Length: 229
View 1 (cartoon, rainbow, N blue to C red):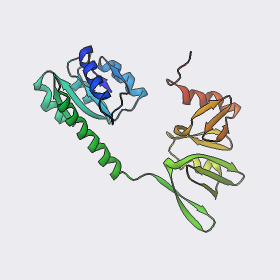
View 2: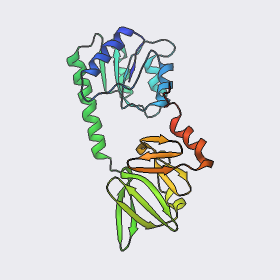
View 3: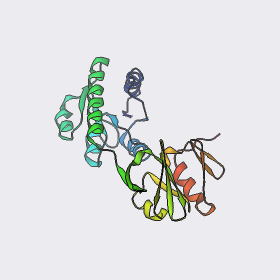
View 4: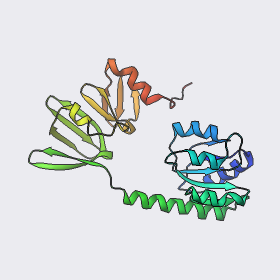
């Protein structure tokens, strides 16, 4: 994500990002107020941030946000460098920025993110199936289906059946990842590929949306993400 009030600076960074295969531009804006709105919708791993901008300068903005992404400051002024590093920015690029210097900075961010990912264990559950306790990685779960006193956990590679009410299992799942869409179904929202009428499409599966939950479910899934014509 890019935040800079100079169109030519944004254009330059945009071009560099397009030339770098492990980077994808998720958004750009002109000032910290616009950035604040963007960060409500997107969660970028990396932010390119100018300092001297209208309304709020970059340093003040970074000082006031909790848990920011990795930040590379882009500025024409050296005097903010110390303050930037005090705020734990990853790098400080002086304008005009060469592609070689840009690449050095983003490679550093890429390495840091990979190390963090490797050191963070994937969250998981153990579910009792027959005489086994089987480990199920949260990220692998597609959806969960109630079958009376049992639940069938559909994952990307298997199906696991265990004795549990659906409501009890829901309490173990991260509420920012999972949603109950029907009295018999919980889905991992990031796995939804399409919505067809009152059905959610996940791979070859069609999961019904309860009539009483339809508005709540669609509002949660489509808010700020619907492009129509």
